[in-house]
Image 1: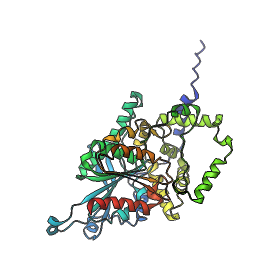
Image 2: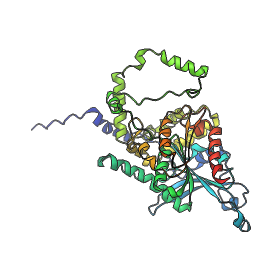
Image 3: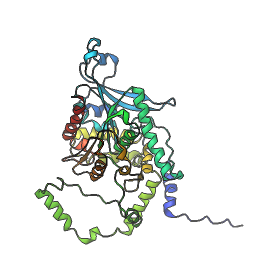
Image 4: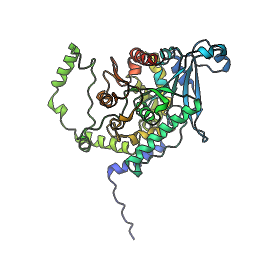
Length: 425
């Protein structure tokens, strides 16, 4: 008897099966025990990371050390850079001013090393300890299995992802004995830090959201545009904000207006095909890190191309950052896949924060780059809803895009140090 022919699957449904052939390709790999690339990058910040108790005891200034803070009995830990002020002699303690804690959380596809241009200045503020963490399952933290709930409905999918990060941060805080903190999160870290402040307001002295993702609602026609193959519309970055009508800004605006109409028309069939492929992979929780790992011997080249765009860094800094970024990107996959659980294709949140942050009960500061792809008006919407109840501010950092702490470290540090001193001085 002739065998029954197999049904032909739609091309988009078959894509992950086809990509499974990449298992035969040699994957890039790293080891969690090799800290040399991380230490090399932190050396660019001017930090001297101590490696022995003797060095800590003999230090007269802030002491930086790398810690793996256990958060459960299953062997999971959060990798931490702790920069602490030296302990005061016992005789001075009764009259010593209170200590404060700044906790930095990183964005997606990055780690604690991406704040290397900020640590030195932030750690010089008197009576402040500075902590920076790798989110659980990211950076050099432990990599537990992450199981998406995308088959249980969107609300369950989002709630599971958010709880994974928020509760691990709370467990980390308890293990270190930090009573209250100024919590500063960038991008993805801003999203999760805001949710932490909503659930644990008594533990947050001040919330600083640096270009946070997931705040605004998607435009009304967004779903239709996705079906048609359009990517998310982004406001083009310019050298100065629209309020400053410089000659350069006028020239950029005129050039955009003069573009041929064909450039603003609908996407080609090829573009639609690739866009739908990207959307399908997004919904199935494929990640940029998966791409890097799958590139095998070419993985470092991908990272070099990405970091090579950071022209505001010196060549030595770019090399150190690329080595570090490559190492954390090729570690085994874990919670990186949660990005597709909290964001829809196009980087709009499945549960936008603008509809949730009205309950914020802590002083809140927003920071955006002047050329940021994340729209600062999302922060303005939140401020209008909470300004009557808490102190709020919004800063736009000049000469910077989304990675404002890297692109214009001087102004980023100045604003954040000012927010720290407003608490302690």
